[in-house]
Length: 257
Ligand SMILES: [Zn+2]
Ligand SMILES: [Zn+2]
Ligand SMILES: [Zn+2]
Image (cartoon, rainbow, N blue to C red; front, side, top):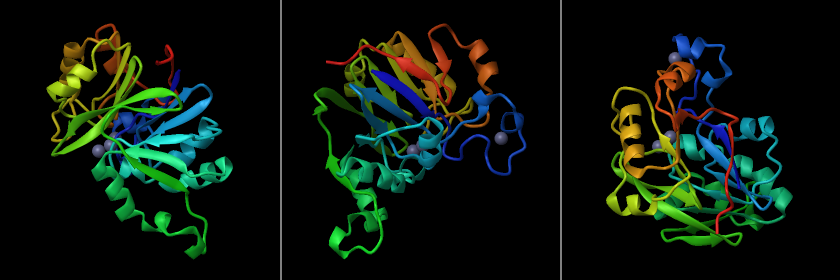
């Protein structure tokens, strides 16, 4: 199993439009963060986690050749607004792309993108072909187990996903005890860490570190960073086994059962 970070930035991306701060002006490529998303490759099949606003740029930059399924964490704009780019992938697959999410996420996608769900014979222009599936319990996708992990994101309960020894908790500021039991024995945990100061819907870096210490994965990578966090400055001060992720980072992991 291979995991590619397509984006590690918060909703505005880094640099942020109209910002002059040192991180936004930085020439370090690791301070350039597209909107958060990952691509998981398993047996040659590509599973995209979220269709971020930057999906077109991500697909071109990292030469994403196909998308076989999408796992949605939630329906905030930065995680969904690249959904129109699924057009090209569904056309190449000659089949609808299966998309999974919790009830609220799937309902919001249907409400916010009604043009996608107009029957094909009634449509005059090209739209993504997607097949939505509400998921709550672990399910099999391409003969592998995908475990949805309910997590808190402000007032919402959204989904992280566990695949084998890997878990991705993209936007998160609390982990309920039932979900902690789903996150034991991890090789790699990817966890939201927005900035140093607390935020109502995202873990701060300190809160994310505390959550990681409790779950004790072998390695923790932080994502969904805002422009307050300079990649090299923060990484220098993190304990071993923890680091900020960066766009384009690749992880090679053991295949899940
Ligand atoms: Zn987000
Ligand atoms: Zn800035
Ligand atoms: Zn969000």
